[in-house]
Image (cartoon, rainbow, N blue to C red; front, side):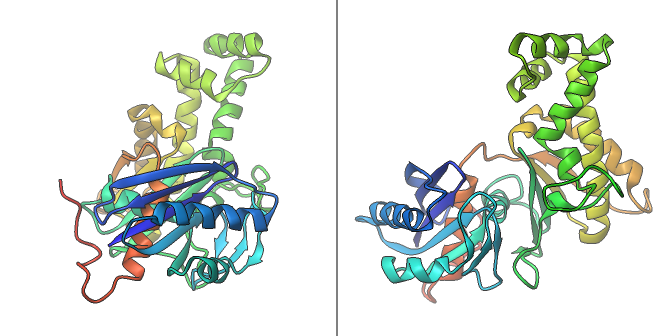
Length: 326
């Protein structure tokens, strides 16, 4: 059964027609009218209608940043979109005429990685996305873990530093303040302020008026000592967070996505080291694997489509969790 996946971001809406193996057959993009819930609804309806034209579509999955209720129907809150207790599924179903599933965007991306990417050979996985903030998804026993209220896996708000840096969520010391792209920039600026190995970082900052993510990425590509030092700090904090998550969830695999994950082994090495330093009962506890995500982009639409297909599979359809062909 084919399904449509929609991923609503703060600046763009991405959509795709996806088959049961996670292959994107058709895709579309349009700007997000984030400040107007009615216009956003119209944009999603128009995109689904266009993608479904001439296709055998059984369901639609819609991914968006925010808190989604356990019934996967109501968006309690979305940080970048004008939604507060928005009954989005009911509104879409009334206009589209297809079964709709609403999912958190990080969950959808994590599910795509689990089904068709780096996690396809395990049953228990934690994905951490390192972007402007820190997001995450948890798969336990081949099932996406959503929690009792539907708002689980907000991994960016795991508290790792008591009375630490203030976070946008209202708490202090969240991993988002120590393991995100913004945190990496802060750490890189601190290295630049210290002189010595921070010289190239300071020079890039002086040339542009401020230090940017691409500046740091370019220096990381050359293994600049100052940029690598900032990355090791970031990796150390993420590794500590993973040790706490590992003690509770016992995953077989940690997957890292988002722009910072493009650093590859340079990021994974300090994560592994800090994980082992903070792992309870080290030497007696099985150690998970650490890897970067295989999806460079489009994971949200693929995951949303697959989750919708699985949720609304008719009795005659093939088993939803058949592994993709290798």
